Length: 317
Image (cartoon, rainbow, N blue to C red):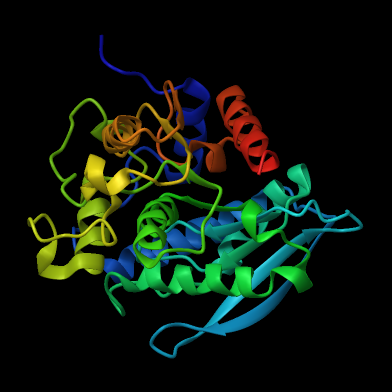
């Protein structure tokens, strides 16, 4: 039997975008950036606002001297638990900024009490790989270097991201291994974007894809340029290129993804690679839902379940 989308998700997407939402051609970064930024602005306006979480901005220098914003989120009045999460936001490598993710991160902080540091890594194609990963590494270094003043135990830091940010976080885990630290306790990957070779349309998924194959081509081309899909792509540039040897010694992972997400198979493959490398991996696949379904229908039971699982893992740091 063919796949079917959960009717509540389908109805919500229809209400938001209509039966035939406009599609940008592959390679149109500007159109996608405007569309994604606008969509997240709309979702933020329509969704509930989280109170009881405070934020403040810091800056740090990246390896090439760029001054980057870091946003630190803490639960108001809470005793710091000692743990912390470094977060890389989504956006297909080409769109969105930390402002678009304020409410997303605040939800996790409010529910768990664990503080988050979100990284305003640079977008592509203005920069290319491995800059998003090295920018995020600079954020990790800041968190570790300032752990004492932030009330953080540097041995209890997790790295987390969704979509492109999930891919950045997975590549960051490998980069940390190559650099010899700072060690992190867990990689928490939410429907991560991992494989630059994922361009062949799966007709079972394509009709439901909220992140399409043309979107994927655009994001990876912006990140990798002419290297996309070729043999000389490094795991620091695309985490899906990791071999079992590359994955040995990485921190335990948590991964979740929707059944109707074009990232499903690459996420399964990454989980398999981790398992073959002896790395603990908790994996969840939710039926009948596409990429980022919880942002569209947060009250759906599978979205609630996913949030519960993520918060459990965050709280365990």
